[in-house]
Length: 117
Image 1: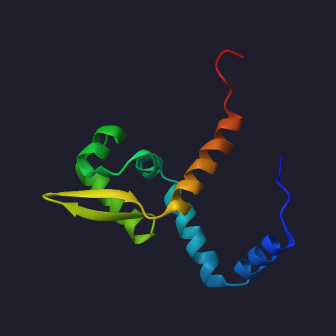
Image 2: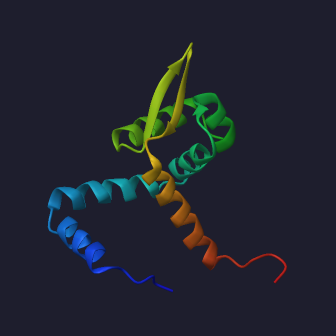
Image 3: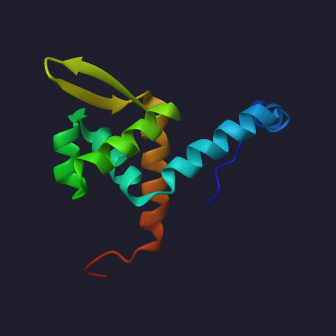
């Protein structure tokens, strides 16, 4: 069921929709979320910051594939990286990304039958 929105929230959305640059950036974000491996990476980063080798184990793809996807996610502003000795540790760029992931997963879960019912 759709939550009721305030007049202020609707006005903010209308202002965003009037700006083509914002629309373009939003479509780039959702495009990045549409790939299975990138979605797995972001989901894993919702739980904890991780290295490329940890993400490789979670996603079951090559290190070069993980690195390629992380580069795209960084370019889209969805992940950030910090160096820890010889390793680079990746994390979500901010809480907005975690919210996108949580809401997407919650919405998807509505379409999946719950076991035992």
